[in-house]
Image 1 (cartoon, rainbow, N blue to C red):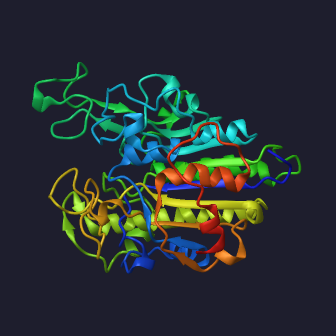
Image 2: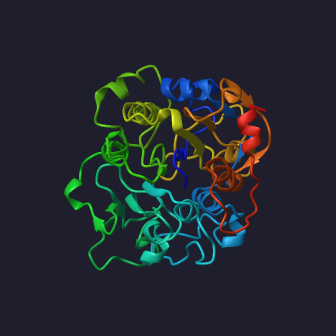
Length: 376
C-alpha cells in the first residue's frame, strides 16, 4: 500500500431486520445507525443470501456461494468440515497482499475444522471472536442439547461423552481460547478489543501499514439475551411483542447495544485521528429472523413491509440493511440514497478498487465504487 492509503472497515451486522433500524421506521432506538446512514449513502437495494454462511462466503471471496460449496445454511454445522476452498483468495488475503494490516473481530462461521480454514489461515493478522454460527452472549458456549443446532443431537440418540448438559466453549484470541472472560457479555469484549486494534493509529509511531478491519458483529443473532447495562432495556420500555425466549423487548435492548457499539466505533476512529482517511462499509448478512415460533431458533425481528425473513428468498430474507460512511466517502455521496441493484459478491472488488489494491483472483462481483462514490 502507498503512503496515505485509506483505512477500510467492513461491518457485517448479524440478523438485523429491515425494520429493526430507526431509518426504516422501527421503534428500536438506533440513533447512531440512523445518523451514519443518513450522513453517508444508504444502499437500499443491497442483496445478500438468505442465511449467514452463504453471505459471509460471498463477501469474503467475491464469488457466489454455490461456487465455494457454501450455499446451504446446513453446510457448516458444528463438527462439520467444509470451509472456503484453498484456491479462493479472501478479502483479507487480497488486502494483506496489497500491504494492509488485516484484523478481524466477531463471528467467522465459514470454516473451522482446521486452523487453515479459520481467519488466521485466510489472511488475517489477528482474530478475536468465535468460529461457530452462534454462541451464548455470556457463557460464550454452544450447547450440547436437544433440538438446538448443537454439537451432539440427543434427540437422535447421540449424547456427548461429557454428559447431556455439556457445552463447547468457542471464543478465541487468535489461537488461544479466552476462558478467563467466561460470563462476560461478548459485545463489551468486542468494543474493548476494538480499542486495542485502533489505538496504535493514534500514536506518534503509528503503524506504517493502513488498516483493513473486518468487524462481524454478533448482534442481533439469537440467543435473545439482554446486555448487562440497564439503560438498554430502559430505552425499550415502550417496545412490546413476543413471549418467553422470543421477546421483542429484549431484542430491542440488543439493538440498542449494537447501536452503541457502532457509535463507539465512530468515536474511536475520530479519537485516533484517522476518520478523514477511513471508509466504513456496513451490511447485514440476511434479513431478520421473525417470530415464526415460540422457541429456538425463532427470533423477534421485523422486516416490514418486506415479505418473509431469514432463510427465505423473499425480499425480507435477502434485502440487506446497508450503508457506507466515513471521512473517505466522497462529498457527492453524502446524504444520498442508492437504489441500484448490488450484491454481497460486489463488496470485495469494490473495496479493493477503492483502496487501490489489486485483485488476486477474478470473482463474480463487480466494482460498484463508481455507483457509491457518485451517490447514484
